[in-house]
Image (tube, rainbow over all chains, first blue to last red; front, side, top):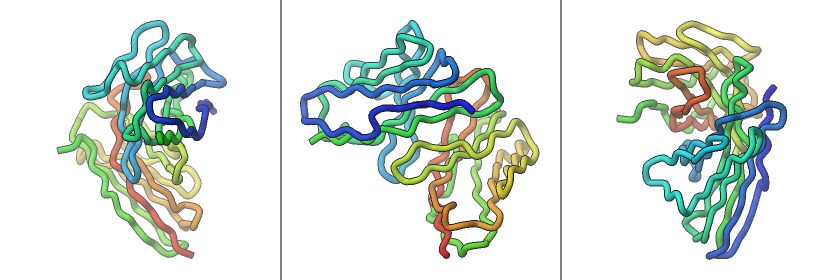
Length: 116
Length: 112
């Protein structure tokens, strides 16, 4: 089945620094990937839709300049949390869908970001 | 009102019980329905994927969709402690890789 690899799985950074999270589709091409944020014991909240070769589409209330998304190839999307603050600490998850299959969306394993 | 409603639980059952998890939704355009299992601190894992109304069975899992009632269910037979996780329903209006709408998730605990 389709596999989505997300890296790193955990990261701790200092306030004010930037962190990059990678999301790769390993065995399929994904023109569209999705970035979610999940707070403890809460469901997934869509942050943005990443489109290969064009600008990402952000959901209402999500700061574009803070959460930079780049989808430079058909297998890689990156989310950069810029000038991180403790309130950015969260679980970030990406997903993509292999349009060749009848399966639903495949998720990465998530990235636990802690800003200290 | 949320587009997709799901009881957050927690739902606690003894090992071997049949578990019933449900979601209701309001958007009649939804046609594709999914159930995901999420263990703590992990990404969601797809369990079931169904299109339109009907039943689908895969091992101990059965997914049911009733579009007329806007109601979907996931049944787990012979539940195991390893089934303890949060179960998320998700749905979309098309099959083109566009956005999913999630339920809030139900936390399930299966006790030995």
